[in-house]
Length: 343
Image (tube, rainbow, N blue to C red; front, side, top):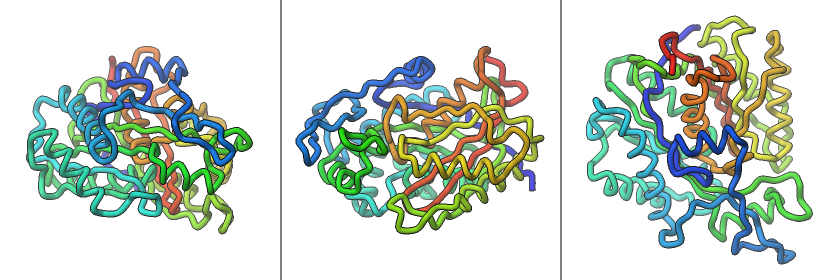
């Protein structure tokens, strides 16, 4: 059933290839990366390549809160009528099965972000600990608030980092990092991104016209094989809400990070839904440039889409973004340039 769209009115990004959305947009369009050898080593003694932000003074929770504050501050620069103290903030964080993902850590990052912004966030604000796929549930909550008039704006902030010893060792042991001897893995990264959402469109803005969320039993470790049922269900739900002809869609923003499990699953889902042309969309991946950034991936993808799809040389006007986490949540977002959205 078609749903009223909500609109991305501003965005901010802080990642390894750009400390602002404008800088990251240029690097992503050019296919640039900033991968580098790190002080982390494989069990064989090879350095692990990472996508790192340029800061050697902040670590741990302070580091993540700092990047989140930079992304949120950039987002607020283009949202002059947004009152931060009265706007719900949804903080996307890593799923709980990863190292260092206990609730106290999330609450500390949230409090540090409030301190950096100099304001107590709206009491409705909360943490969504679902990693890459957290964007879907967050957008559903935001849409409900906006549709019911409970908020004029909603902010979504994603921040994550894989660059600590416990996380690196966890994924090395699981053979999921891209290192010598394993080509089926990802490059760990870190990033933050923020989105401001409204029920009222602005010129040159991007509409979220469909959101699908479902659960997939399959797991990357192979303990349960994936048949792409969760992603297929989420895709159908998002397309049904968008209520657009099959030939409308021209692009697919994918969270594919280099692991074949997620690439195969996405391919199977888009083939299974089998709408005309859906399995032949041009695919755009951000992890090729910024590495695996977990909970920041979804907001970053939409931030980039809000800029690239509203540009005069946009590769298309309608796109599908899809995200998956290790716990089984699958999110699909249908995007369209607003009719008045001319850059």
